[in-house]
Every structure is written in C-alpha cells, then in structure tokens.
Image (cartoon, rainbow, N blue to C red; front, side):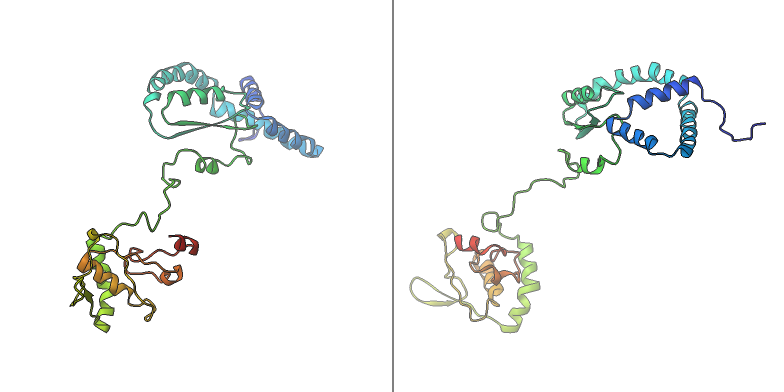
Length: 280
C-alpha cells in the first residue's frame, strides 16, 4: 500500500509534455551547458536522486498550473487584457525599462521591446546578450541594470553644473547675513570693538564707511594687510555688507580660506586649485 505523501505516482502527459516544452524554450545556451555539466559530472549512484527530482518537478507544473488554467488565461485573459492595455500604452508617460534576453526562444522578446519603445513616450529597451527567457541568473545583476539605466526616478544621477565660486556666487540673503553676523561676527566685535573710517575724494576722513564707493559706482579694489592673519576678515566683510551693500570677494591662496568664513564663500573664494585662483 502506498504511504501517505508518497510521490511515486507517474506524472501526467500534460506535465511531461509541458515540462519538456518549458525546459527546451526557457534556458539559453549557457544554461543548457550548465544543465549538461550537472549530468555529465554526477556519479552514477547520484543520478537516481536527480531523476526523482525531475519527476517531482513535472508534478509541480500540474499542481500549480493545471491545463485548464492555461487554457483560460490564454483564451480569456490575454486577448481581453491586450485590448485594454495596448491602446493606453502611448499615454503611459513614466520612465520604463524593458529588459529581455536576445536568445529568448519562448517569447518574441526583442520585437516586443522594440514595439514598446515605439509606443511609449519614455521607454528604454535593454537586450541582455546571450540570455534566454530566464535572465535572472548569476550572470545578470538586475540592480546594476536599473542603476545604469537612462531614466533616473530618484534624481540620483542628475548632471548638475559644477559650482563656480566666482561666476555662480550670489549675494547672501538678508536673513543669512543677519544669522552669520550674530553667530560668527558679533562675538569678535564684542571682544575687540573695531572702528572703521573712510576717506572721501576731498581727502577728509570720516567715521564709518560712508565714503567708500557703492557697487553702482563701478569695480572696487579693497586692499587689506596680513598683520592679523585674516582674523579680522569677517568683521570687514560684514561692515561692507551692512553699510555699503558691498559683497567683497577675497583674492588669496586657498589655504587662507580653508578655515571657512561666516558667509559661505561669499566673502572669499572657496578652497580650490591654486592655479585657478592665480588665473582669476
């Protein structure tokens, strides 16, 4: 008497024929070679186990995908689904990546990929060389394919123009200036109490920077010295911004500015190659 749960019963003709059809059409040449290697390199006493596994595999097709289900899906689902989906493909304006093997013997994958590329506004077709219908084996990395695809749904590959600290710099907003002065400049002002004087065209000196020309008067070269190793730079820049709305740009070796300043590069060049600074 056959024990409960035993799988010694023979597979149905549908399972055998269906399994053979799938085993012939799904693998590509490389996968066929791998299967052949398994048989050719297996010891005789182990072949029985493999054959039994194959027999059980035929049963899986009949149990999980019966012939009536196949008939219903092919006869009822595919045609109706295609009639609904195909007319809408040209409206599907989302980044789409179609991946298929160029040795697919089961379905016309290449032709389908070309059709979708022509129909859909933003579709890219990727043909995997020497791959059959089953492409997700150890030779193909799906994650890398998606990352390297032309579309970029997460904006991770957007080619942004490299920031140029000279031509791309903008004057900080009033809020940014106020915050920088309060957090970086005010403590130093309270410590040293700096006084600023300016001289007009008549040679008279006046307290404050009122005699310094405004940006509307044309370019201005502001010359300072290195006695305080640039420690007073933030106070000078802040005073020019507050009194005369002048955004002074520093000209010096990058090492001078590597410590940063309170205005995010606005008061001096961001650290970069010395050649660039000297050329500017």
